[in-house]
Amino acid sequence: MATEEGPEETKVSDRGMVTIPADLCRRLNIEPGDKLRWTTDEEESLSVEIVHQREGVFDDFEPVDVGETNAVEVESEFGAE
View 1 (cartoon, rainbow, N blue to C red):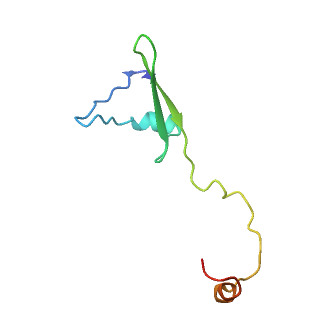
View 2: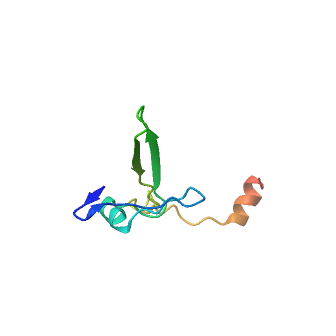
View 3: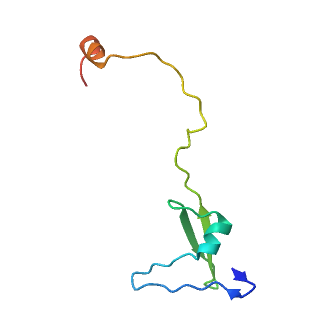
């Protein structure tokens, strides 16, 4: 992606790894754990799709009180697995 100063550029390491420029990470909201999906077309142009992986998908749910369970009592009643 180009900036007023020119295109962003990174170097590929000997292990095939690249670093995403910090400015792009901020602008595109790329965070640790996100994935990048790489595709090419017939002209060998490369495109990258960001796949956001958010932890705690159930964080918005309210807890439900199901009462207390005594594992020793349950095991004696139903048996161990």
